[in-house]
Amino acid sequence: MLKRKDLLGLYDVSAEEIDEILTVGASMKKLLRQNIKKLPHLQGKSVTTLFYENSTRTRTSFELAAKYMGAHVVNIAADSSSVTKGETLVDTGKTLDAMRNDVIIIRHPMGGAPRLLAKTVRAHVVNAGDGMNEHPTQALLDMLTMRENFPALKGLTVAILGDIRHSRVAKSNLFGLTKMGANVRMYAPRTLIPDGIERMGAKICSSREAAVEGADVVMGLRIQLERQHGGLFPSLGEYAKYYGINESVMQYAKPGALVMHPGPVNRGVELTSALIDGETSRIEEQVLSGVAVRMAVLFLLTKEEL
Ligand code: CP
Image 1: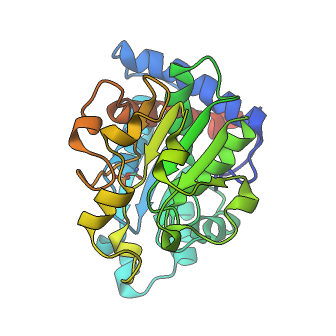
Image 2: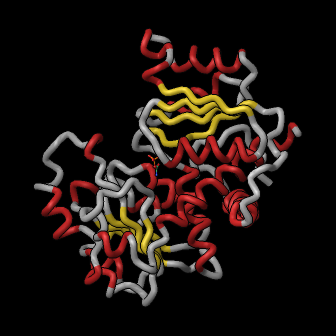
């Protein structure tokens, strides 16, 4: 049973805890599919989203998840808060705590910022993406989407291609998927592979085709231009040509292999438009899984107090 104050990453979350979140997430998704969006699980709770980086999917889905379960929700964007006047993260957290917030959902460009906040505040803290470190609810929603399409995560082969170096999604998926018994392969230009990722359980492949060969799921990752400081690959056009996922590359995967991407997608760079919009794409399904899994996380973290 999930018995923790915060969800900061999947590095130290057990397979049993992941399984519980995915099971509750699957039930939530069933309700969402029936258009049931009025649930009592967070009635009387206050949830704040505190985003120091831009977001469409994560912030909106956390807000909807909390509202569908009856919480009061406040959204703070760093550029319209007292952070611009020099207030520290810790002081911002203490201020939100004093207002009796029950959950703070934080996205921050610095890896480790959610952990620092969690140490300081009474509220539950959920990491919505910290720098190049982790994005645990993204990996959970990816796993929920996979689990709905296959009998089990155990034994699946998942190929992850893209900007692995700068990707918190890649790391959280690697931690989560390997704990659940899946095999994770990765491929990217050498400059976009971080040192030590193999020690974390990834198999680094020598070509796109080798990574995708026999894979059940092929996941593209966004080229994170905002975290790159030049010189990691020649141009987006060349990236697409030599490293992108296209129909010829997908022929190496298992027939019907799923195409996934956490979004936002650079169309024609990480994935071709035909694959993004094709029958085997689960990119929109991932978005619905995101609301469901975030409902599960918010409920499970706070349920002791109900
Ligand atoms: N996948 C993801 O984190 O998307 P956003 O940046 O839109 O939240």
